[in-house]
Image (cartoon, rainbow, N blue to C red; front, side):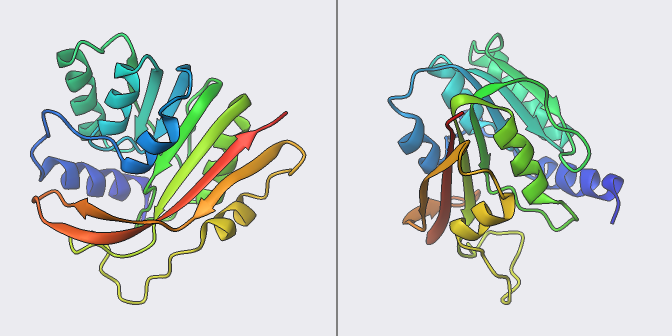
Length: 208
């Protein structure tokens, strides 16, 4: 499958869903970031835009990237409607080929899963290198299959956060794993249905 097919897949997925006028942030973001001083943030795979808008509303300057032009255009319009257009820069990136420029105090990658070929470890390694000293990389992956997930493969395997950290293969003298666990929560799907899901949470801080 090529990049054009990936673009079409994600554009079609977002276009099939009505845009939420007030998208909510991910729970693992809010619990991690609350209390941190605002700075420059990068949201990888920004999707509906809830994380980017939440961060911007709390003073962060946010670069929000997604492969879907539909998602990017919607987020730009939402940021403007919420009076946050000066704090959110929505950009289209196929992370398999390009990575946003800049240095950041926070980079988040929530549920950066795809049915297409993507060297996730390389993307997350690039993210770690884009952190300023003291900056954090928050990676939140699915640890279970929600009823509304696009991937209903019963044989899918969800690597533990420490496996993800090992794949990124960062120098322990320059990056520290601050969190690697698998908490559960009640999640709400796009149709309003709820289910208990498991998150795989990895938080890495750049120390030097």
